[in-house]
Image (cartoon, rainbow, N blue to C red; front, side):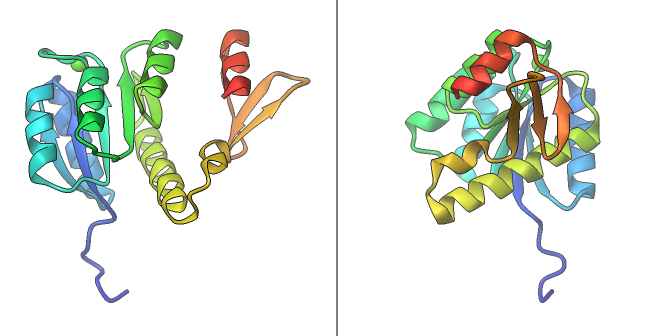
Length: 172
Ligand code: CA
C-alpha cells in the first residue's frame, strides 16, 4: 500500500444523542474511516455542502427534522452518497420509508459497533461496484431469499424478518 494512512472512506455521522454520536465517531475512526459528526439535520446539510462524503450514517429521530427529510434534501441537491439509517425501533414503516427516500440500508438500535461497521463496508462495496457496473440488480445481490423456509440471508447470515417483510423484500 502506497498510502497506508489514507482513510478507507469519509463518513458523515448524524446523531443527536451525544454518547452514541461520540461512540460511533471514535469507533469508526478506529476502524479506519475519516468521520465528521453532526448533532442535527441542519448541521448535517451544512457539512454535506462543505465536504465530499462517501456515506452517511443517519439517525431517523433528530431534533430539527427527521433523517428522512435530511436525506430527501440531500437528494434534491443531487448528493448521491449512500445512507445507512439508524432506526430507534424495529419498525417496518421506518425501513420502507428509509428505502423509498433513497436510503441504502438501516441498522436497528440497539446495535453493535461491529454490525454498523459491517453494514457501512457492505454498502460502500455495493455502491462502489454499482458506480462501476451501473447494474441495479447488484443492489440486492447480497440478499438471498429462501421461498420454502421464508428465511432471508445476507452474506450467508440469516436475518430475522416477519412474513410481511419477506414479501416486501421479495417484491424489491
Ligand atoms: Ca435520535
